[in-house]
Length: 149
Image (tube, rainbow, N blue to C red; front, side, top):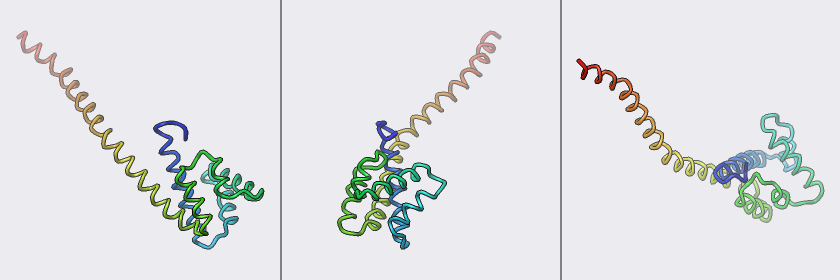
C-alpha cells in the first residue's frame, strides 16, 4: 500500500500520525519505552501496530537504535524517521513525536481538502448530467405524443 502513488501518501501519513500520537501520549504519561512497546504488542485493535511493537522490541533487544529500526519499516514517512533521529539524539522523543503527529494530521487534512475540492465539482457535474438525462428520457416521449396529436 505504501508504494502506491496516490494511496501511499495517505497510508504512510496516517500510520505515521497514529503511531507518533499514540507513542507520544504513552511516553508523556510516564511509560518507559519498553512499556509503550508492550502496550502496542498487547492491544487487540491494530494488528499492524502489534507487529511493529514486536519488531521494535526485538530489534531494540539486539541493540539497534529506534531510528535504524524504523528505517526498515515501509509504513512511516521520511519526515518521521528524521524526527525520530532528532528526538533520539536530544532525548525529547515524546515531544518530537507529539509535534509530528499534529503536523501529519494537518498534512492529511490539507491533502484531503484539495482532493475533495477537485472531486466535488466532478461528481456534481456527473449528477447534473444524470438528472438532465432522466428528464429528457421522461419528457421526450411526451413531446413526441404531443407533436403527433
